[in-house]
Amino acid sequence: MAAFFRWLSGKFVVIAGLLTLAYLLLPNVVVTVFSFNKPKGRFNYAWQDFSLDAWKDPCGVADMCGSLSLSLQIAAWATIGATVLGTMIAFALVRYRFRARGAVSSLIFLPMAMPEVVMAASLLTLFLNMGAQLGFWTILIAHIMFCLSFVVTAVKARVMSMDPRLEQAAQDLYAGPVQTFVRVTLPIAAPGIAAGALLAFALSFDDFIITNFNAGSTVTFPMFVWGSAQRGTPVQINVIGTAMFLVAVVLVLGGMIVSKRRNKQSA
Figure (cartoon, rainbow, N blue to C red):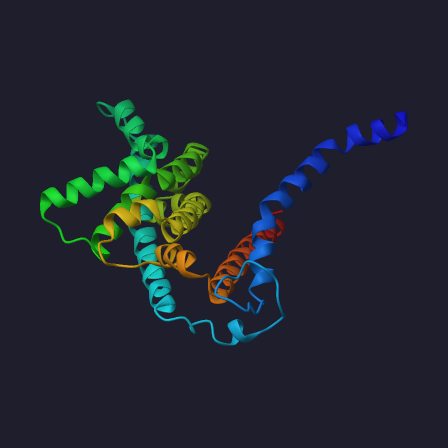
């Protein structure tokens, strides 16, 4: 028994990590399994029969693929906007000294601490007072504002860890400011920028609360899922969820492979 406890204490961190990973992946496993289900009723909550019908026709539910396409468009544009603005803000906060720098840094991170429902209601009030028509553009503006803080956090952490001597060396070799930024600064900051962009895309695509307040009659994929859950959950929703999960896994594994190859080449 003592030997078992010694073995357990030595492997405790690994076991805890594996259990946590299993806990996180369990909902994805359930979604994947039920994407092959053929329910007898409207609700896809109990396993009935194995079927590939939903995979053969993922757009078989009316308006689902339209809402999915809309969510992808909003997420893509929100990612571009939040990444560009967030990267510039992160460089400004790290590299430059100006008045109220601390206050600006605190205000940037405020949306991360603020409840989503409060931010959603505030944005709705702003849009209504401006007379803006709720729809695609109000959702996009809200998502960029919401994702901006997360991009700044990711990029700022990367910029703070950069060695300024590398840029100084490029300048000593007669590289101009633009050339130094493109060939030295940007490649070093690229992992942080990519992490912020991926996080922004995931947050924008998955958001429901802010979108629901500022969408008007526009229906995104999370709103479609919420509406469908009240009438019956089509299997195609599980198919789309499984496909998005697999794409995310492939992107992460691809990034790890590329990173390992670069490390081997640099070594």
